[in-house]
Image (cartoon, rainbow, N blue to C red; front, side):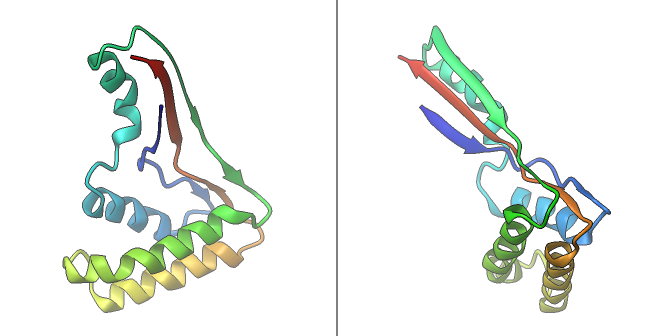
Length: 122
């Protein structure tokens, strides 16, 4: 069994700069940010003949948890992004300000990146 993210989207409306920046950071900080889309292939390559697979995509439209999740993730990865020179401290401050705007905007609609799963007998 595997349950992994696919860090591939930054959907929100109205658009928010934090979402685009987070996608960039995931792709440059995480070792396999697009692993979710590879899971079925990886299980097939390992010999799985019988398996189930799917994905879950969450959406916030009433200031739910995903806007907060993006802000907290930005806070958590910021120091690593600065140390790897993916952003400056000033850019990090701007990212947090944009993430807070997204979190507190009662009109925002936000999609969380997909979670992909595979269950197989090997």
